[in-house]
Amino acid sequence: MRWLIALLIFAVSATVGHFVTLSRIPSFIMGQVHQALAAQGVTEYVWVQSPRQTPQSQQIVRPSPDIAYAICRFDTKDGPVRISAPNWEAYGTLSVFNARTDNVFAQNLDQGPGSKEIIIRRKPDPATPDAVIMSGVGIALIRRLAPTQESYDRAADLIDESLCEKL
Amino acid sequence: MQAILKILVLSVLGLIFGGASAIWLGGLIPNSPRTGDTINIQGWQSDWSIGSASANPYVRARVARNGLLAMRKEEAVYFATVTDDTGARLNDACTYRVSGGDFPAKWWSITLYDADSRLPMNEDQHLSFDQTKARSLSGGNAGRWSFQISQEPPASDMAAWVSSRAASSFDVMLRLYQPSADLLADPETELEPPTIEQLSCMDRAS
Image 1: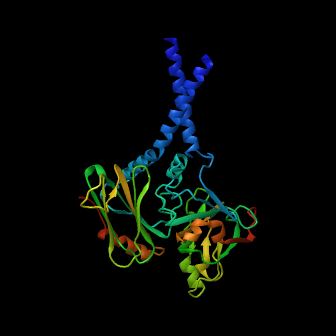
Image 2: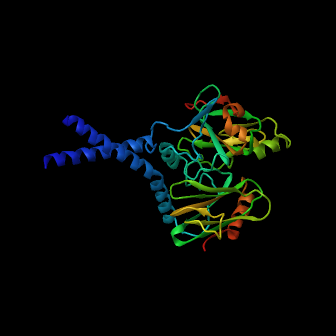
């Protein structure tokens, strides 16, 4: 009987430890990413264009040499956030990831002239019914197909026309 | 008092065991068991769970570790192979011809990575082959194409070359941007992956 009780205590503890750890892995990894970006000087509410991916410039595993990346960090605890990005002549996306690494928003940028704009809030607001709802820190990411140096340079120039700001 | 101590010890051991097993099954350490949805089409493998909004906590943990900031499958899917058509490991001592046709996607590219999943450390500026080059080589249509993987550039047609210089053992990754709905629904039927034919090999001892 004592052995049975001991086994039960161990099993319950192991189950709790297992699922609590498992549920926290995504947010832990995203936290590490934010820390690493901050250490590299990527401050919040600023779009940062990564250098063209070459053997000499690569900082992540399996970088795509065909894609121009830009990233912006934000935190919804500071209030609503406005994100915008100009459209692109070829394949491109604007996407947003929450603190649990979920891709909470993604939209194509290859839809003619103009730009995409979204508002991100912690709670729904009738004034902005299309807002993306999420809490905590987040990462906005622009990907633009730019397989040549010339197209990469044009994609990089668009960062000045992009917004990532507190409202 | 002794009984409480035993309960505490058992609880702590249980928590440690549970946490460690979560880290293992969540794919945070090498050689963890795969809990996702692996697709294998003639040696080209894809992790179909990357980019999915999965409710499975094991898949979520592994995707966070191995596919962080990955696009949704509707935006891009990835297939990689480490072997040629005969099943031999790809390596930079050999020259290969990669051939295929157009893929059911808006745009595609094939990129070579070394054993550390890095672009090979060379300055040849021939890192990938893509749909734009394929169409340029085939006169603008989406017909059959081929390119060469080798350390040295081919005698002609530099556009149809991906350099394996300094790659050692390597793999090639096919990226399909905005794949068709049919491909997402039934990749084994819809995707005809590229073939990789070994043309020759250098004698490393010479």
